[in-house]
Length: 510
Image (cartoon, rainbow, N blue to C red):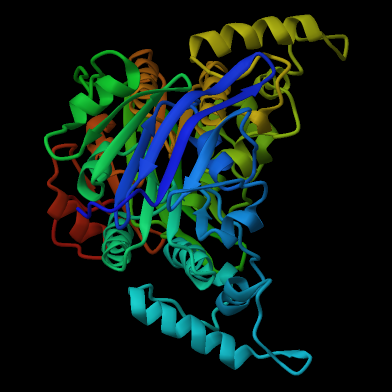
């Protein structure tokens, strides 16, 4: 660790939104060549603090110093001028443009009056090679992997000479291999003197990549500790203020009658390519069946076809013995399916609706919320107030717009709405993405409670430990086919082999 003056200092930063104090006198510093992790529960103030640093918000009190000099960061362009770059949790890329066009956007190299694409691609390739950020300069963003999109976001900041890099939940949508590749890139960046603020809820990753950890709780800085000597348990205790159960405890499942039956299902993706290829399986009441696989192997299309979002090409989907194949979302929902989608902002919530309206999206046709076709705002608000309290959604009231909540609290709203609908089958697609350890503990407990109450639960997750902890059976999907079935005590090696196309382990899936 270098002993130079801090590359960045935040002193006494306070930010209020009406009566809510999002940041309360926070001090934070970042050393040259350091990875400093920022931890905290959903709504603890992490994103607000980084938004102040990046010029998206102005602090009500406090000061910012860069390389010892007090500065005013009143816009993202000013932050960029100061050498501060930010990679947001939800990427800010133009899907129809190429990698190069996205990276140079706003600072394009020109030849005369025209964009010099070749020069732009050369600069991108040079940066890519220097830091090990493998990208194809000419690839179109909407056609590349999530991992490459993130590398493009990082290259955007480096292209603008960023020396302070803010990464907000950088591994939330990455596979384990992509996360490891990202960490190698971060280590190369710090060797070059780049300083990194690393925001994450994954305690094992924080311990792996960071030098120090600052913990926020309810808008206040609780402590800053060196990573050396810290444990997942000690960090979780600082975050939540109590001991957190990091290992799931569950009783043996007691399977009942089938809640979901899928027979020879075929479905195509948005490009009309076959994504689900003859899939058949059953989920019974009282069990959690997990779908494991590398992202992009047909999980999304399988879930959407079961939930009625995607019209299957052929095959059969039955809910509690009722055939809902190709009948759409309304029929599937009425049959008893609840669906927590993987993308809360695109599919899980209507961001311009209030929390009360979002929480009523499953029951808006039913009494007491609806009477003779008229919505009761009072009933909606009362129901929302109860669910927000039960699911510990922070930062909002029933009248609050969903867009104003932190990502993790948005996720809690989506989870609350679906579980509260009393379904026969609960489809949980990445249900804990972006949640803190306390919220993960809560959601895992609710999924197990649904199982123990006789519901069928179909879990789709990219988190190996989550799958092993919750599942009673694990089905592996590879290139649109179910290739193996495992018990929850399967080893990481066995599961990894099956997920990458090896068929040596597990039981064959009919």
